[in-house]
Length: 308
Ligand code: SF4
Ligand code: SF4
Image (tube, rainbow, N blue to C red; front, side, top):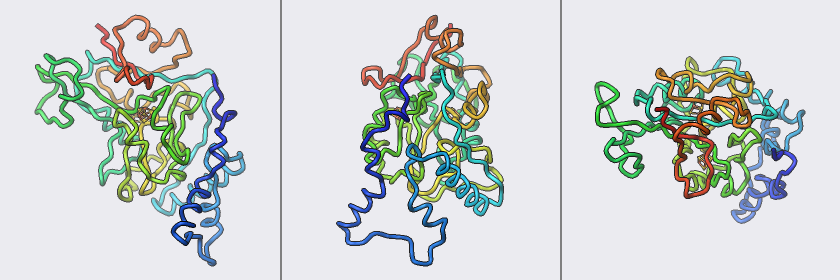
């Protein structure tokens, strides 16, 4: 298994700050913290990319964030930096025969991952497709609102980040604010993202979302167990996306993502692709499986299948 930390690109050392300084030189000014700025403001300004941080750096940054979140929400928030579990590569399965299009996964994801409620951001989209046409992304309806699901003439296809093995979003980020971790999860450092949205343009699955406005997240709905690379509250002007609920699957090994738990018909499966005994491996070996937009060679670790 490649070790991302050991093969950090040299380009990473070209820090966002240096790049911004370059841009500022062109513009003639760099917005440095003022002379009365607090230690926390300087610390935030001088911080490094998450992948370059030492354990001490991480502890310092986490302490600052937890303080900021407590001031913002009036609640204690825990920000974990749990690393990938050795010998684990996550894979996801979705049974198209079982999915009934109820969108409980969408709501389960929102409840768990602290996305903006206003404006609304959903990391899962459930597409409605005509049975007679089969899987057809061009023809799919993104909005449907019947009084009852499932509808006789339709089937449903939930789409979220496919956690590509060759993620095009990562390649295009000019500041290395997004990368693939050893356990296969593509993550974003929200404090490093400059909001250029190149990654959104590059993602063939529409899986990335931009926080155009300060995320509207009521304190009462805030989930306080978070991960730095996952569901911690996001600032305005950054991109976010599904992380297979990194805060759940890493902080408590064996725990399922929220959408898996929320699905009332068991259409969602999740597990370790490196474990030959796992359910996901069984599905890949024994069911009719396909991946989305296979021709693009992004190599998703999200497998659609038909159980029967
Ligand atoms: S689905 Fe999109 S956001 Fe997710 S890894 Fe692939 S390209 Fe990146
Ligand atoms: S794995 Fe977690 S973050 Fe991803 S769609 Fe499911 S609930 Fe949302």
